[in-house]
Length: 364
Image (cartoon, rainbow, N blue to C red; front, side, top):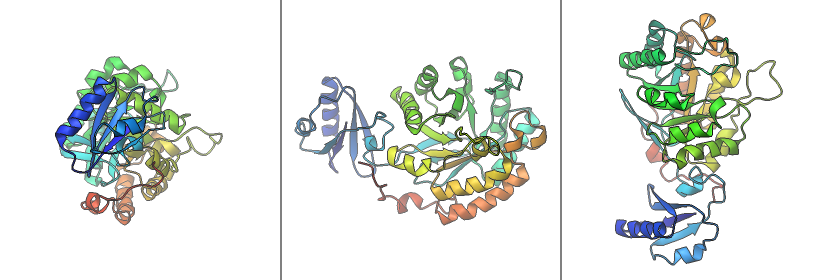
């Protein structure tokens, strides 16, 4: 249930109402929007009468039930407003969100050696990326495939971060490794295979670093959003959703089927930022540029693209990786699409102001 307060409600009245709801056994979460404050009530609210709640204060504008099974994740929970995930990096704060420029994340599937990861970091930064992706720990289908360098791989990512100033996004597979990963990473990634590892979701939700949550290979949208709800229910509101392709019946030509229609669907369901991964979504580097452009046209907030200095010799996912030169060309092409949407960094300086009063449809 959400309580939308009237514009100009005194802070003291909001605190009083929160304390009253807490005394009734609910967990109030105060959400400060651009124009007003919304109080989200978490708990067993089914028996609550919205009209009775309305009587609790003359400053209440309206009381609405959140009908979705995912509460904190729901767009309704923020009264239709999008959320932002602000990530401090060595180069400054980078913001993920629908009213901000598109954020590009690039790098290899896995960290192989220092020369390779530092070279890649410098190249993708020069092309316009804000984050370096790279796995120190790698979940692989075969136990005989390269599993990553583990803790020493984290040291290599730290070296690349220091050399380039890029933020780091890397995957956590085991809760036992979370603290040392969070010490290096600016964003902690939960991969597709762990999307429903609920104990891991609770652990990443209890720590402070933002979380990039990839969609499971066979996950429905509800499954995915409920996984995000697990993270947010532990107190971490900084969740970024990442579509990386789902398994369908046609595996002959594509590794996965990238679901770009999920972007407008998510816009009506959730306030969380959206990332598209066209590398895993297709499995072939030749198809990555087309899907990246299509993702921008569909309204993504971020792109995650695999880049490797020598894809044929990559220890994992070489066929879907671009070379640095290919990434340079792609970024130039993407700028045209991003500028047309008003979402590329140089075109997006006034984006938040120009979209300040826009609201998506079909929310409530």
